[in-house]
Image (tube, rainbow, N blue to C red; front, side, top):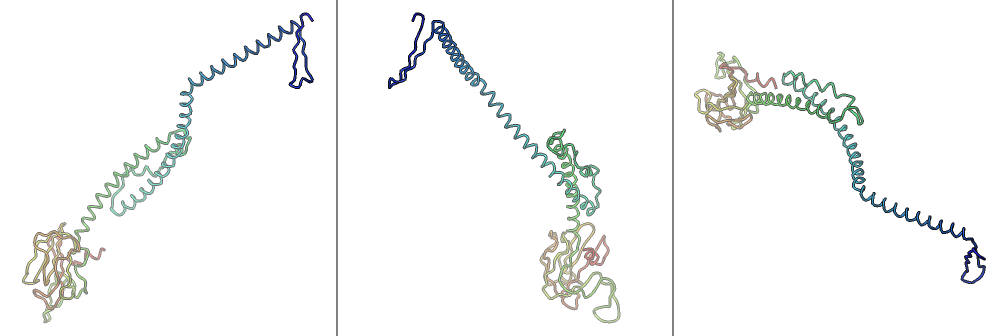
Amino acid sequence: MKNKYTIIFIPPDHSNTHQFQFSKLGKQILGGGMLLIGVIMIGLFAQNLYLNHYIKERQPTLNHIDQLETTLVERDQEIIHLNEMSNQITDDLQTIKQLEEKLSSLLKINPTSSSATVSRGIDPAVQSFGSSKPAIQTLDHQATIVTEHLNLLQRYYEVAVLQKDKLDHTPTILPAEGEITSSFGYRRNPFGGRSTEYHNGIDIACNYGTPVLASAAGVVTFAARDPVYGHKVVIDHGHGIETFYGHNSRLLVKKGDQVKKADLIAYSGNSGRSTGSHLHYGAIVNGLNVDPLTFTNFI
């Protein structure tokens, strides 16, 4: 058949063959379709190459975007953590303020007005994540408050050191263990008779060789034999206060020695004008004899 074309499909077993006939126009249409399919395939292939090239060029940007997303997540977590720290700092500042009030009462100091800022707390607008103000602003504000409190606590510390030094140099402990057998002031003469005498200290009954301790820190100004008090020690505690210890059997310090409160300075005895083993303990304030129990009664 002229101008006719036949395509025959023959199976391997040569059965059920199929024939397709088409005209010259069909051939042209078929050829055009094949050409179109080829063009499309080439276009798709070219597009795939372009996309691969585009993605390859843009990969650093995509990686950077991924990194930025990761960074944003980390920053969000950091902001949440900062807010938690901010809340903890606020709680700590409240605790510090309460301690300051107690210290102010004990040390007789009026706290600075700046210390009251903690009582106002922090701005509610910056207490939680996602607020209008960054958490770091709150931390900066609280850091300023903490600095103010540290300065105030440093002042408290300095006053406390002075108070401790004064307390260390105040004779608040008795120098020996034993019963007080004779108090400060006028008493009947222990050597007999009906006369009275002025007793410028207290007598503490104790066995011979009982340890005698410094009742406060100070400097030994006398450590020798006295005609009345026998082996005697005098300690200058500063602030116009002195203490003396008489009738000892042995002295363990010498003039010029620095002693601390409760340091061992002598052993009790019966030296000097004495009727038996005991310790005579006295105190002098600004040159006047006072009852040494005046200091221990405050403790």
